[in-house]
Length: 158
Image 1: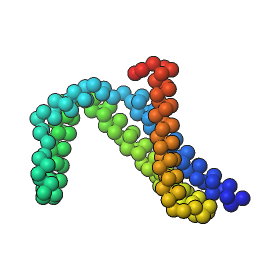
Image 2: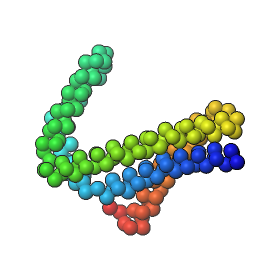
Image 3: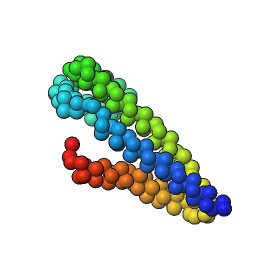
């Protein structure tokens, strides 16, 4: 009976990873974000903010500070060029994506634990743990990619 419980915990935890990833993809695809306008605003702002020279990485704290300053100015300029409706849509999208990231991240930590317990229970070499992590993560993300692709095919490209 203990073996069945350990395997159930393993599969259940990975379903908890795959589920939020798929749900996030569905919800974020339906989010009313005017992507074209946001991309255009970002492209226009990039022209005003040249990248920080890679030479600054010889002084990492300075490079980090310069990159953060550039990033803040870039973000501020992009947000100023968007309408209030576009900003609200973008912020809603980012908030929803962040929420799903937390859910999937927490589930992934549980999946790591359950995978470790399965490997320990079955007395497998530790390399199997890493193989299972990679395979199950690929299956979780691959499921979402395949289902979203099939949905686009059946419903029609967006």
